[in-house]
Structures are given as C-alpha cells and as structure tokens.
Image 1 (cartoon, rainbow, N blue to C red):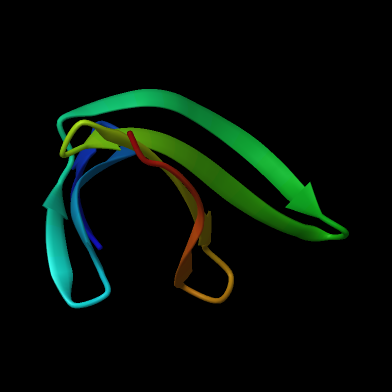
Image 2 (cartoon, one colour):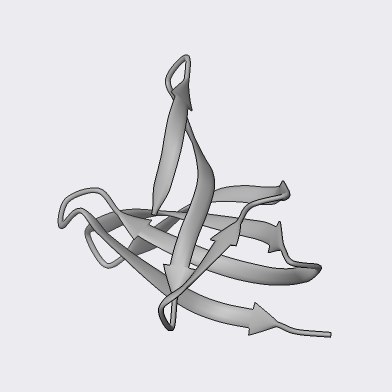
Length: 71
C-alpha cells in the first residue's frame, strides 16, 4: 500500500495484491470501523475498473484486502 497524506487524511494511491500493482483511480468511500476496541479505517477504491475494500488497522500498521467486486 502506498498513499499520501492530504492535510490529516490518508489517501491510497496504489496497492499490491497477488503480486500485481493496482493504481487507485478513485476513492469511493472512507469509513471508520471498530472491531471490539480496535479502531480501523475502511477504504472502498476503484482500480482497473473494479471495486476493492481495503481495511487499515493503524494500531498494528496492517492492511487487509477485505472484499473485491470484479466485473
């Protein structure tokens, strides 16, 4: 995962899945999540014409590709 900070907000630029790099064309949704006491942030992004849900856990500094919607 790579991205930039725009003021205080993180914006994904690209991510790697199955050894393939996907450039983020558009961020369609950003939402805060809680998994018990753990705070996470969810990003829905459009890349290569498909939609991907990426979850970020700042406490663990991990990213998970949670869902894909592939045409």
